[in-house]
Amino acid sequence: MAPQPQPSYESCIRACLDCLTACETCVACCLGGSPQMAECLRLCLECAEACQATARVMARSSPNVSKWADLCAAICDACAAECAKHQMDACQRCAEACRRCAQECRGVAQAA
Image (cartoon, rainbow, N blue to C red; front, top):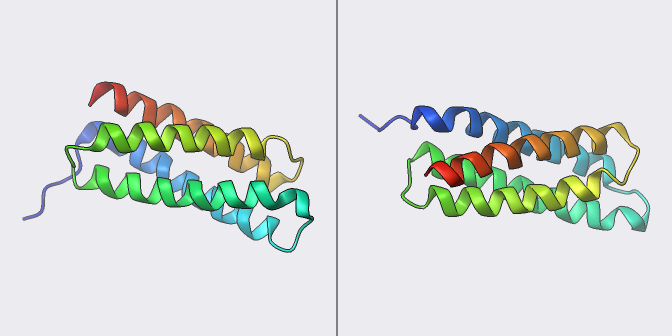
């Protein structure tokens, strides 16, 4: 039987998956937009990848969880800062999801 994710990771895994969804939604909103949305698009794509990978690592209870969580928090912070600059609803929701995910990831990185 496969090991279950550590109970302390459940909230962070949910935050990562919520952030992944918000980033992908923001990407869809930014596609075909003005050139000034390029950085938002790039960071959302990068953040979505980091969130997905971090959730997977936590689900496996990897010994490298703290490193992944720390990196994910940093990428989420950057994405949140960029998305917050744009007034579109998708960008604002993404910024909030990124901030929540970064906070959860920092908690896991410090506890692991």
